[in-house]
Structure formats: structure tokens, C-alpha cells
Image (cartoon, rainbow over all chains, first blue to last red; front, side, top):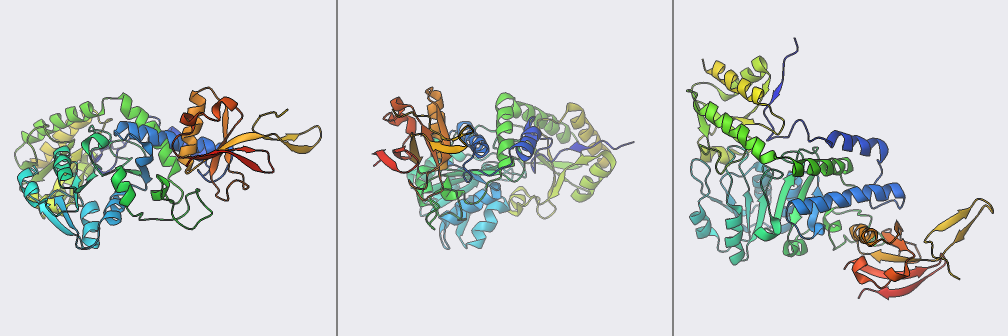
Length: 377
Length: 100
């Protein structure tokens, strides 16, 4: 008998993808597979129209008044590198949270930024007073919207409001929240916000977005330069958006997929569904002896990521058991966020992370709880 | 009489090309050209995206061709990133207006 597979790693990437994504990718690759902003023929303009609509729909969903400030990238990590390396130099003072992913911490270490980690409590709750106390003299605050380990949401609007008073740039890593949590970029006063298309938005991997404020777009240096299909009679990178930050051929099949996914996400109650799953998981896992639920105790203030630390058993053994015996796919270990695990008291053993998605069924969640119970026997 | 059709045509009958005069609008970016094309469509004006004539610019960008005279001075259709509007006859381009 074929073993049934239960995918509980949607925080790494969504699966299945949103309805329409496969068809949109296939359409591009089989019917319209030409480049954009290069050739001057009708099929290229058809592809250009899709890119244009993708930029507009993204701007609409994330509260960006001018779609020029939506930059397509190769993913969230690329977008974060663009904002960090384009803005900051060695020795610049930067504030980060204690929950940051290596997508943020490794670029900061690479450029030798002088970063301060704002304190969080053992559930990942951001210490706003500590943030305020260290804000003066900072050039930027780089903050994840929600932890990829425990799901705790950070107060990004309040941080932005405070940072603006000091003229500090506010850069947000929304990899874990885009497509699920409401984000109003311009109204919140953010300067940069990075996310991938393939997680909460349920599009295809290989595409991300960087949203920019007007003031940061002007001063940010492009990380990549090259052909844009515009002002091609010069060897200088165009100063205007989005071309300034979009050299090279974009991920066109990914943008077709994003268009389909944005349509799907905007018409379906994604957050409600995932948070109902999360409540079910938290209730079920909390009732089991032999493990510790990491992060906040309820769904209040968190995303649909549920991490547990098995007290007497190895977390990797747990993940292996769940997969080999029940086909349940989870993510164990450090989740590329060592500082988060130190903050949550789960370093170096890590956690086993469960993350349901829009297509996860109640029956699958029940199997997860049953399987974890069996492992603990 | 000038016939505004906005296209270089090929006559199968005479097996030769002929050109009909059109307006073209150039932009700073491909994105701005796409936006203007959408604005024209929304306003009920026919317009076509095409490569910028080399006589107008050595950049290999995209421009918008159209033949609707009512649109020529309607700046809202073109957006802030329009560079200029030209009257183009296939041999040369006469500047109608520039966005300074």
C-alpha cells in the first residue's frame, strides 16, 4: 500500500500551491515563453502585461501606492541582501530582534555591521523598552515580522513609528507573513519589506519581492546591475524604478504563477483557515506530556508555526519517526535561526516544527496528534 | 490627407512596404509604457506597444503608437514618466511635445 504523505512544512514552502499556479506556469512555459522588455513584438508585450499586472496586484495587496516600488527578486533572501547590502556599510549601527533568520544575520555579519540584538522574552515577545533605549544613533532597524521558529509576531508598526522619529530606516523580513497577515506598507511607514512568493502566497519558488519607500529607493545602491531593456544606449544602470533594481531576465514563469496565486489568496480565507489549524494543533500538543510547546500559549500574537521540544527524546528522532511511520513531513533542527533558539531556550537541540497550510485537512491534523502521542508512549 | 493607422504595412497586392504616419510616445521605462497603454485602453483609445524607432532614440525601449489626435495633448493618459510625443512618418520624427 502506498504510504500517505502529510505535508506539515508550509513555513519552508507551501505545498500544494494555490489553484491556478501550475496552469499559469505551464501557460507561460508552453505558450508565451518569451522575454519581457526586450523584444518589441506582441507576444513580448503580452508577457509584459502579465508582469505589469503582477506588480500592480502586489502593490494593491501590500498597500504600496506606486507599483514602481514593487521590485521582483529571486526570493526573500535576495531581497533582504539587496536592502542590507545596498543600504548599510561596515560599522553602521543596526538594531535587530533576537528572533532573526540567517537571511538577515549572515548579510549583517558579512558586511561587518555593528548590530545590537533587542531583547525578547522566552516566548519571543519583543522588548519595546530595550528597543527604544538603543535606537539613538542607529542607521536602520531590520526586523522579522514573525519568527520562523515559534511564530511570534513582532510589533513592526510600533517599531516603525518610533524609528521614524529618529530618522532610522525600517526594513522588514516578511517571509513568514506575506499573504497571510495584513501588511500596509506605506501607511506603516516601512522603508523596505522583503518576502517570497512561494510561502504564504502559495506561488512558485524562485521569486520574491522587495517593496521600497521613496526615500530608500533613491539612496539604495543596486546589488546587481546589468541589462534592463531600457536606456540601452548607455552603460549606466537606470536611475528609475523598477529598472534600477531589476537587471537581468526576471523569473517570468514565477510572475505568471504569482498572478494566479494573488488571485487565489485574495478570494480565500487563508488566515482564518491556518489559524484554526494552529489552534487545533496547539490545543492537542499542549495536552501531551513529554514535550514543551515553544512560544506563545495561544494563537494570539502568532502565525501558524508550531514548534515543540521533546523533553526526554531526541527531536530529530521524533521527526524521523513521524515521517517514516506516518508520512508526516516536519522540519527539525535550528531552522536557520540560532539566535531565536537561544532566546526560546531550545539551543542546541532545536525543535520539531509543524506548519499547516491552506490545503491541510482536519484528518491530517488528527493524524499528526495521534502520531506524536504514539511517539511519546 | 494623412491617414493615421499607426502601423508599417505590407501590401500583398504590390508586394511592398508602405508607411502610414502615427504618433509615438516614449517613456523612461517599460513599466511606464505599459501603464500608458492601459490608460489608453481605459479611455477607449486604440494604442499599440512597439519598439522605439531608432531615429527617435538609440535606447532599445518600448514606446506607444497611436493615431487618436484627441489623445495627443491629454497628459493624464501618458503619466509622469513620459519623455515625449512625436509624429513619426517612418523617415523622421517631429517632436510634438516634450515632458520637461
